[in-house]
Image (cartoon, rainbow, N blue to C red; front, side, top):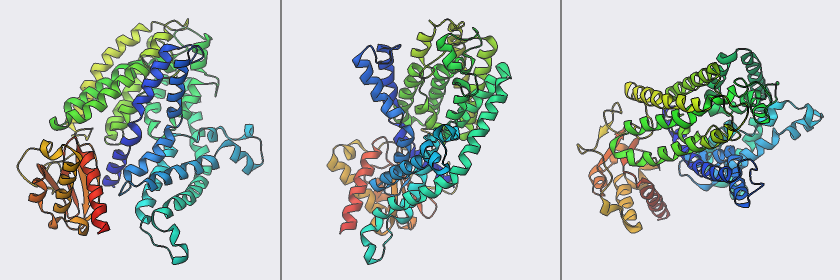
Length: 499
């Protein structure tokens, strides 16, 4: 089970890697034409529309990216399966489809089905496609159906399985969505405390995608609160209207960058360069535009405890700002751009104090995250266990400290091939290697018998450490150029199998 969640967490890196470009496109577009959203500037319109094409389809990115990251050989058929499954499920549970099933009008359909296009559904279908790929991508059908054997079989099975999954969600999804509406109604009457509870639940629900349903309760006119709409329309009470938005600014602009700094400082020295660029990009994204997924998805599944702490701190921030009646609003998210323009709105109340609160939360996040990471040895980016001490029963291949491979072995495609060929041979070749994939600095390998591994041959390729974790799992520590080596290993494996 632990290995499953490790693979799942790693698979998030592919769709998450596209998120920083979204913030760049939106940030530049809104800065050029904030009020018109592209109506007054063709350049702004192009940038905003380009960013919108991605952010409006984030669930689809996860449905396609997760199968690639989780499946054994990361084949395109896995991605196609995720795409097909997601499109089928989304269409089956759309308000128009549900109206047809029940022979009612679209307006009469449960509002839950209007929120079916979310990250949770994308993740669910992505996992389904990956599991089906690993199980059936080498399945041979009878001669009459041989064309549909192997990889071609997987998209078909994913589509059929998505139909079944849609039937299950047809019953369960309205229950989940309806429960959130009930919670929102109860929270509304709790004042500042309710704002804090909402902030906590909002972050906690992000992995499921159900936070969209919760946001609809508070930001829009679902049950009459309409915090976002009223703030920008200047309808409401100064210091009250906007309290479900104001507390996010200290978290997104300052808190999460503080968490990113803590993760960077606690990363292993040889991995800081690898994770530093991701954390820096995520921090800029969070501060400027309020887009926090590039940071949150880096530790959300690796360290659920840390994500719970983050959710609690978000709740504290919303409670504090609501209690002090410091308000600001956003149209996109709680970043610098939205904060700046919201200060001109009549209902904004002491928005500068949100920045002061943010500086305090930068320190709080840094201290708290650093303490939790070190106290509980949490596996944040750059701290994934890769030594004998971190893996009970693991056997180190040598006493050398881990570092990147010899630079001469990793310069140029031909030398990547040479390095990959030596590693593959040292692992026992096609007779022993079952599957392998790469993460930030390592090649993770599943073998039939770890006793057949020639560690000296692998180290001769410039590899300074090989970790054998039990009879079937091996990690080859490569360094920041691991993707190029892993890609070359896939080519070597294909050549060997062809022979």
